[in-house]
Length: 156
Length: 156
DNA sequence: GTGCATGCAAAGCGTTTGCATAAAC
DNA sequence: GTTTATGCAAACGCTTTGCATGCAC
Image 1 (cartoon, chains in turn blue, orange, brown, red):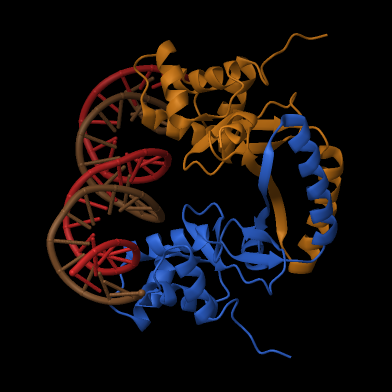
Image 2: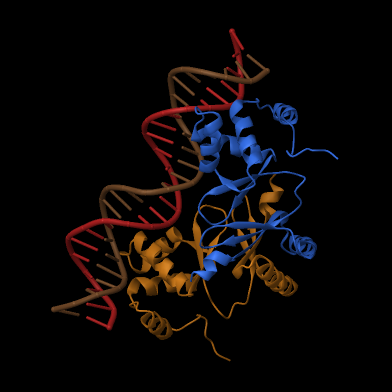
């Protein structure tokens, strides 16, 4: 069994970036490493602070530009959880499809992949029907549940 | 059959605001009227421009404060369609449950209520299961499909 | 008359952009 | 050596806040 934790090796990243006309840089590697080490959905500023520990010269602007590129190339997924900042996670193909459960108080986010088979099946059907009826070329969907996590619900 | 187009009469709005310790003002009425007349999902600035026609002295700040209050009291629904600004619609009880289809190019939004019976049913089941498993008090959900509308898909 | 609501201006905050420098190739 | 990537500072756009004035009650 392979012990491949990361979605793609440094070499693969390098190659794929090159294939799109991008260069492989320390900053881009740092962003991938930070997201690879963390299993959270990090904001640009969080990535910045973590990347800084490895490379103190990195700038926040670079994080924005890098996450933009890496997202557009499919290395990262970009999410909006309603807390007014974009959040990113590695597009790790070893992790299957998942949806999110968002605490509206503390912003804790739980990725769930339970019960989603039916969900995804229905989603695909709906997507097909909607696409046809409204003549929309549907490319993506968003499902999130909002509520209060155990801690935050308790204290109320 | 009643010819009641608005979700609640001015009297009802007045009473319900009062019940929460809020006063009935021209600005609050204007925001409700604007949203009542439009069937779109309006941004704060759009509401501002329309409300201005009825009352030129109104300020954008008031729109922000008013939509905040009216949303929190359940008169309005607040949405985020990914275009970096909040959008509002009347919480009109005569309109049933609906979800959204969002064009990622021109930001056109289609409310659909087709095919959602099954969707809502599954959602409720999932919500119950997730709530139990993760000890979350789920209060809300978001479903949106993203893609390109007929016009925007054609021109590409 | 009292206290909430308003308008204006300024500040906040995440994000983007311009430009000179530095690094990848 | 050439071209892309970076860092810094400034600008941006939506939203929020401070404060004196105005309006609902």
